Length: 618
Image (cartoon, rainbow, N blue to C red; front, side):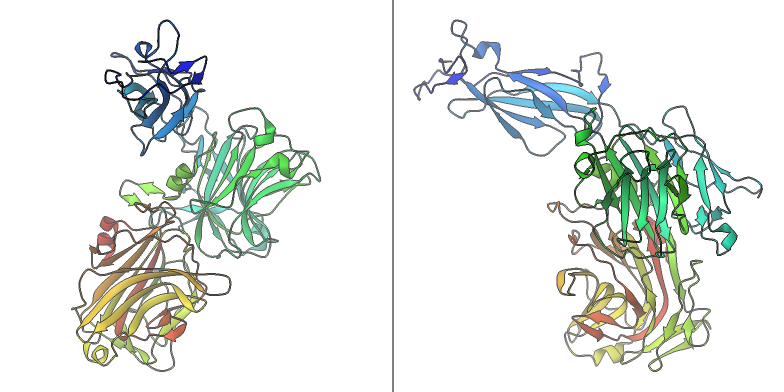
């Protein structure tokens, strides 16, 4: 190749040299931590998210032996496990950071570019990424003992050799209101006995060094918002190195770090995006303390995650408090309280489940994965509301889920309990003014949830509805809309179709986003029971839409409807107020009565898989 680079300065030679070849495969050198695989050995290094530094240089044959010049002007870099490529300028650029996002074998592909913009033969660098370290502490509370004298729950983590079992104290006990549903247990800190108002659980020794990067997470079921409610903390002699809590002052979830272990020092906090999070629902919380893998305290940050989503930007600790110093908690992990001014306080009232701690800063994608609470059969789910009309009598349908939700109260007119063919009660709805309602919500709708209704639609009454009519089987009110609803729409005289819809509004109640996933076929099963299920999977990604914060799915019976397989929601929506069957809010109007009958309405925390739904249907 002709001389093009002298003493680091590029000069463009004349174009049109027919025998000037494209660049050969460039040289790739790793500066750590990843090493190149050989034919007989491939040692894993680093971890997902940890950058490897690589140096790129022209092939020796592309360098003029006399002048040391080269026609190479840049490189195209691609990690084969990732989408897209990046261009790097210069024949000898500075070491370049390559970040693998998954563990296992990886191949780095690099091509050199010449002065004419031509890309040459690629070079390949194969290396292997070690899996990231797992949780160093995990307390699932699934080991409820048969002996009431036993008050210890096991640390079930498998990373490392040290285990830190937690002891239940102050009246804490186990509850079958648990995030994994039937057969599971959680930590109950919800006694109404005043003598047990300071219940908590704690380990004897700290499971993580709070001076280094760490992550903590838990599922919390908040029963009291009148005062600060601390889910997790790591106390020192006077203050807490961190606390994951509900802040009564700000009415938000919060993750804070004490600037020092001394009275009166600042608590530097990452707050949740949304105020007034719902109580009486399961919410996944995580807090990440990140030292950026160095000893420079000026870049240390904390960040809160709610239901797998980062809240705001990471908060720089030194920028918020000049007195900040990273310090290690010397006491055990506290579940359900914290330490401030030398005394324990902030006792949590509610339930806590699936507590875990890591001695590293989890990436957002890792936290999102943890929030899914995966099991062998898919994401874990908990039935948190079950209004079954079958055994109902009088003017209400009680919740039989075990969570003690308010009963669905029948409207004064247009709704009544009638016996079906098997002698079981069903809620009959006239489609004009009949409905049943309770105070909601029953689930944290910024996370994954499932709602399923068994309904019959009266063909004659539906035929009388005008074209364009939308009847709501069940829905949760959100200002002048429904945050979610199961809907039947009449498109034409003989054309009606089911849908599952989610709506987000701004602070003024104006609709900012509406996402609706519709059935594949028109409604044909009038006058017969239909199981209609809507699923919001908050952790699902939407192809081509990186901003989507969840995906909607609709099932009729056990069959998923695939007309809109990528119905993604980019906003967050949380309903409050009326949760109703037989009517709902749509387009600013509280009406949309549906004629027929309803047997049952159930709501789960978590997104049921197709197989999981099939096992739940009659």
